[in-house]
Length: 292
Figure 1 (spheres, rainbow, N blue to C red):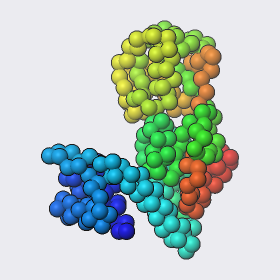
Figure 2: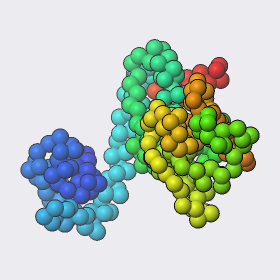
Figure 3: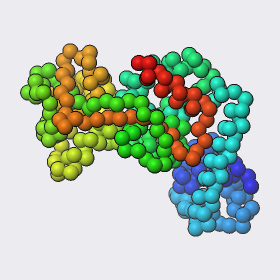
Figure 4: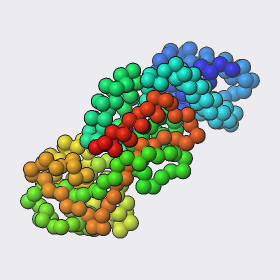
């Protein structure tokens, strides 16, 4: 069975449209249509119901899609393992890191790793930890920095970072001199928050939902410097890690009470081949953080 045609079939199934799938693959739409027809002829099955704009899988197509995704993943893993027999100091890693972690924890680590392993390519993906976990489980990432306090049984973790979430607010804010703040007090203020899917946002959203509170959100942004500027200009208060605003003269930090912990780990999917390049990276990160 032709693996290229199977891959084309899966892309059409994922995207649901021949034109967009052809663009995603990088071939002409007629070539894609011919490839799918040849696959259907080879199997003697109708795999896709075609409408004017959408391509829907038939019942047979859904069965093939389930089998094909597993087969293609195995083929990819086999190719990766065979290529790595040559040299574990080569290869590529798809790494998921949130904007905050990428900006404040990983620049020095990534720079050091690239100096030591110049032939290992790292493809960075910036998403919230919840989205990164889904991408790991879907096989879209090799590694990701995700929450490790609520571990998923389908993943393995290397615990890296234990932090406490604090409140960041303007020095002249009425609550700036408090020894601590409750989540209830925080939620009553004008807020500057991360987008949904980021743990520093989810803590607040989950509490507000549970308490049936309406939040006064003045701005949603994942841009750290913009968040700090908005807080410094008293647009609202936010959640952050203390080290992010340590050098900001116009911003104070106040801890939550009870404390809100933030545990992060480097994670990868269980029962899935972890490349030698990825193993080298995990070891390097663990050693770097242990030294620091």
